[in-house]
Image 1 (cartoon, each protein chain N blue to C red):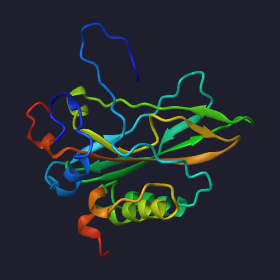
Image 2 (cartoon, each protein chain N blue to C red):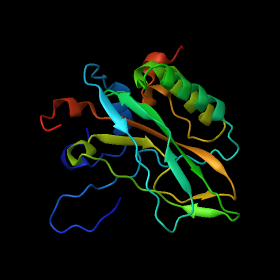
Image 3 (tube, rainbow over the protein chains, first blue to last red):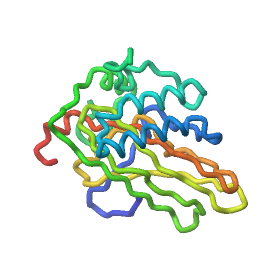
Length: 83
Length: 126
């Protein structure tokens, strides 16, 4: 949320490093999202246990021009590259 | 590194991500809020909360729907609380800061891909 402040610290939003995801209008990667969400629900919402699923979702986007191609290491998946 | 004041240095972020080491004993619960300006006719909601550690990239989703019979263009920004944590919250990619257009009755998943800077674990204020 934005607010006018006088002299108090206010949060400065920064644009994302790699910009904006195009919308997945046709739901091409929806099944990958669903797998990831199910993994979270099955694992008490612990991100560390669902990284393969989040990697698969982003790979889906990259394969369908819904995300700029990026080496997996630069997305923090260096330890999962062969998985 | 993002440094004080939270200004990220473009071009270094990818290097940081590649080399950062998760601080596995510092578990942080990230919850997502969703506020929609009164004049924007979207239904917009978060889909989850998530537990992350500094130095580990994470994915989360919102869901947006245009319930009207006309296309609606919206733009989102974000806020992070508490303030002291905000400078460590790095969005790698999301749906924000650019106009997004939803077609009539369209519903889409909107991802946020982010990480919390490992330096968070060293800051005594958070």
